[in-house]
Image 1 (cartoon, rainbow, N blue to C red):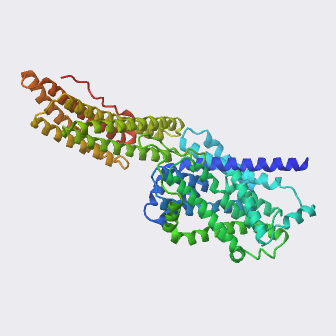
Image 2 (cartoon, rainbow, N blue to C red; image 1 turned 90 degrees about the vertical axis):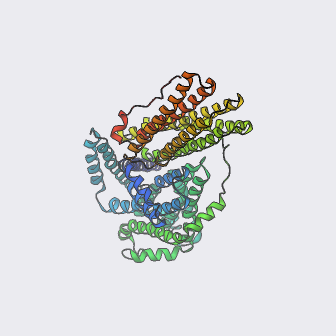
Length: 578
């Protein structure tokens, strides 16, 4: 009965520790959400900056698992290269050791209960604040409080085994430098971390057991190596069902930690000796309370040293390591090119809406690329009188227009879900802008396909445009393409000043449309031309004018200052008749 009660206490204490860590990580991610994008942009400089980026993000959000899931999701979205991802993963492994130091120093050398209650007391008034930022900060303090309460309960729930000599003898049999004992402890640490999915939690358990005298320094250090392997399970699970590059990033995380742990096992004794020289006293000769007091610090130093040395060894070979991963996981065609699948990673380890928005923006840029490509193909169709060529292009552009429809449906569906989960007004505004822009880009592809069908109808009915009219329309095409490419180019890095340039292009589009429409209407009114060809010209010009309106809508949604975005009204193309 006592054993069952002790087990329940340990599991409950661990649950409180994990819950506190989750709340802490969520609060930190929400508070630092906008800054995380800036940190991630640093990694475009070089590999060293990628390592520091991973280190900083992991320290900020207190979870290497969250960082690695974030990395896998960004590689999946094409926002990050594999080499950049490996650099961030290296930094995240170093950053995660901070939690061990917090547990070792605060958890065992301070009045942890008083510290926890003090943090919760600060969180209480902030929780009922009207300001969203203050409520996010309250989660940080509440998370710290619950985390340390869980650690305190974990310490007190460990039963005293000092009088059970047979248990002590069994546990001490694993506390040696034998390879078999080290491997067994590494395996136990790996399995425990895979189950808990938090190396910080298993590190807290390891330090607590060592502090209570359950395990010795050799076994505890080996458990730490196992935790580094087990923590890769979260990113691996997140990579299931993603694209090739995302799976490569998850594999790089696994190989980096596994190979590093194997090297540490091979040089286990020298590594332990090194850590012993940089910490207080001689951990191998200490006994009793002196040993218990120094063990937490020693284990934290061992965890940091192992990950730091591993990073130093791997860093010069990042490029070669990336090439090895690429050979191990070659690119393969995963879906039919005419079927769109929006792949994103939904995980409790990455709850910052701003990070999802980056993925959606990248997909929106691909949608804009598709629209520009379709328009260029249409321009060739307009100039041609070859029925076979035009029929072939109509089929091609129909598939691309259907592909754009799929993109619109899936991206907007995701944006609506994101909007429902959005925690700040700014997030809601940004999501609204994305929904509006995606919808307008899809409308552009509709207009392009409509014009392609008009060209098909023209050749089937043997209608020929006058050379002057064709020249006018080609000039209008060039202006429209310029507008589309301007929008496409500035989608991901917009500035408010670009809005005035968009208005200038829109005015030019409107002027050109009016000039050409007036010419056609004049000819129709005088009866000096074939009505069918004139109506077709009007349809082409009307669709081009609609594309200009859609571009302006995108510009206003994307380039306008955030505070102005909700008040903007959609420009609806007018259903004018000849």
